[in-house]
Length: 285
Image: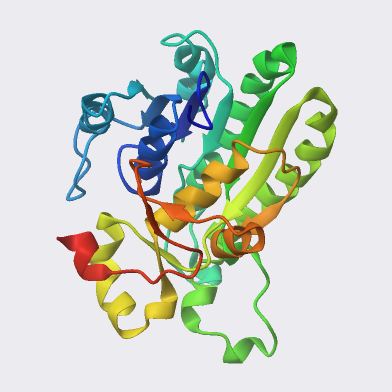
């Protein structure tokens, strides 16, 4: 029996990338997974769709369904949890994985971009958590995992020595900082209700197929700046199946601290440990 047997999970931003990988791994552990994205079809040059992700899981014997919601829109997310509960009757796990970023120096960020990032990266996770908590509290158990980022942390001084790239994601990092603080407060509020709330951040670039297309050259020249998607997913699985409360943890460090091995996305075999390197060529192949 898998660690998520008889549980239902909603993962936002799961038509591709980290979200899709989580959905595959959770399904392999017995969960019924509800995948969510802003559209059913293709998105620009990015590969993969919501429906193809669902088909991939069900073809392997997993249970999966899809819901569409543009998280920028308060209206579209207003009934998202209710729609996500419909296919399998309830919701035990919420993973707020969807995120939006805009590249630009702090003095140049636009109000439009800031509003969109705030809606997707902060307001949406808060709204969805509040909606999901109704059923979780009634049943006396639940798991909420928010995906964070080290961009939420203050650069070390002197700031002039910090790479420009770190400053170019300040607006994005600010929304993640807000989510970090909310996660901590919510975790303490609902822990006595049997609901476990945590935040997980990658140590470095998570090498999904999409990431490999754009930053594979960085991973090749600087292997320490990338981590296999399996590492991030294994850490997420630990946080939505255990009793951790109010933690902001990094993927590799969490797995190393508990000695947890890393398994393949289909759960069939161990592929490494917390320190395993990212293999760009294997991801692209």
